[in-house]
Image 1 (tube, rainbow, N blue to C red):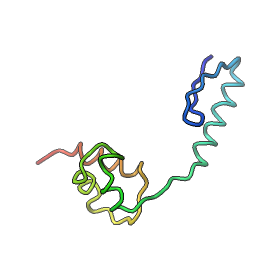
Image 2: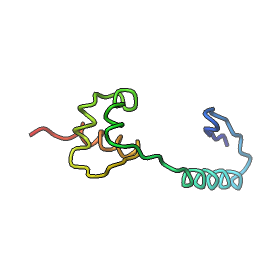
Image 3: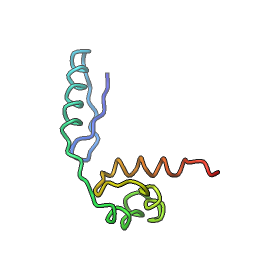
Image 4: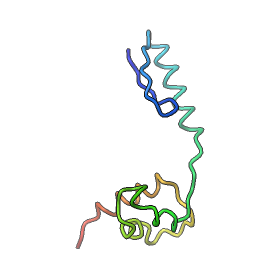
Length: 91
């Protein structure tokens, strides 16, 4: 079985011999993903860097964050808010 993993910004191909190795590989991935600390940024900073960070105009990020009272957000939270904002139906 072949697995692929991102290690220090490089994709590494893993050749796994049996199902036990596959299970160990999955457990390691779960531990690594759960232990990552997600950085939070101020809303103003996210809006100012909207084009570089999200590929959208600052107005889109401002609209997506409208009504969100959190002072700081993670990039993942903002991406989800942008996606929801852009997929809303116009009435």
